Length: 220
Ligand SMILES: Nc1ncnc2c1ncn2[C@@H]1O[C@H](COP(=O)(O)OP(=O)(O)O)[C@@H](O)[C@H]1O
Ligand SMILES: [Mg+2]
Image (cartoon, rainbow, N blue to C red; front, side, top):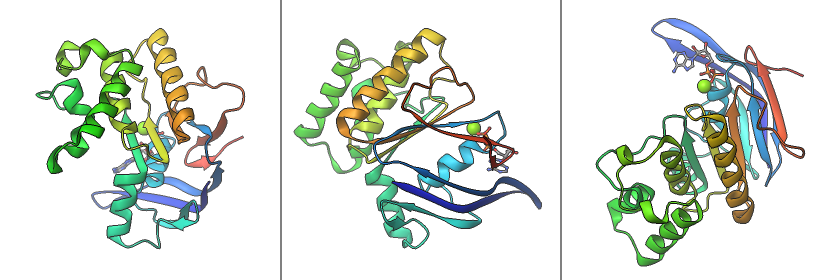
């Protein structure tokens, strides 16, 4: 479970203070498929980045399965981000000169890829319908295929927490529905908690957990 307590975030734009989150408190159940829903500029990405320790709150605390992200040392937070969180972004963030398979394995490339990881990466790509696309580079793949590569990359370490920022923002409706269905089934198998940021409510299903925000505050 993730416990967000009285979290505020003020971004600095030069000397200008831009409040993005104002005293947000909410909980995200372990194993849930959770949406952060709200209009553009409401603070959704800011909240997601805080959950993944990509950024720090101005005040308040975020506790993930009993561990306070704020109480961690920088090294512990790096470890959390690397080993327990998987990120998926709107624009896929794939490396143009690597193949699909290499992009999935990117977190392991610096230290060398073990056969076990390679097999798991191939299996994930197969599961996502990209078995015949392993050696293709991003510019040879459709948007939906690129996002599936990014999903495989995010899931390879079986993270406890999968965080997706408008993952279907660049895809058409049919592709978006298919991608979210894949994300749901894979994460359910891995028992990962998933948090998806979106400004559309079309993808919410019964049983999903929904956090609505507006102007940096919880809305209901
Ligand atoms: N790195 C940043 N620096 C300055 N302002 C930011 C930064 N990130 C977000 N903001 C501002 O914070 C507010 C919330 O942004 P964001 O969390 O990106 O909302 P959303 O994802 O819902 O569109 C907006 O006013 C945005 O301009
Ligand atoms: Mg955003």
